[in-house]
Amino acid sequence: MSEYDAIVYDLDGTLVDLVVDWDAVATDVREVYDGANRDPPGEGLWAMLEGAAEVGLHAEVEAAIAAHEHEGARASERLARADDLLDRSLPAGVCSLNCERACRIALEEHALLAAVEAVVGRDTVGTWKPDPEPLLATARRLEVEPGRALFIGDSERDLRTAERAGMDFEYVGEGPSGV
Image (cartoon, rainbow, N blue to C red):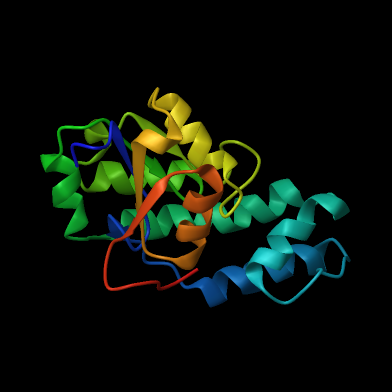
């Protein structure tokens, strides 16, 4: 790790496993659209989130997703890479597709919050992975150039985000999983 000045971790699937029933989340988000008498832009959760602002439902959709993430963060399971975070000597951050508060809850639950200097979630900067801005914002908060940091994650979305941000990437396990 001596070639890097900082490490950025994805959260869910990398440091912890959030206990979230994503099908139930999608159902609740669909109910937000139904309650507003609006057709969602697609059946998938992320399509519904992406299209929410266009129909004036961004805050409501975000709140529905975040409520599940908060509970999932409280019930999350710590993963082995969390020990690496505690043992590291470099500045560390978290860049996640989960909302920032859920990230902080999970980090608090597993006594990891003090080990990170920056937390950027889906709702922190207005865009989310694979857009590079959340990862770039994490690097700025760590006061490191993207090319001098390593992003560790579990998904192809994480890999694409790192590539777009000009940051080296490492899979947490054998290869891509999840979103």
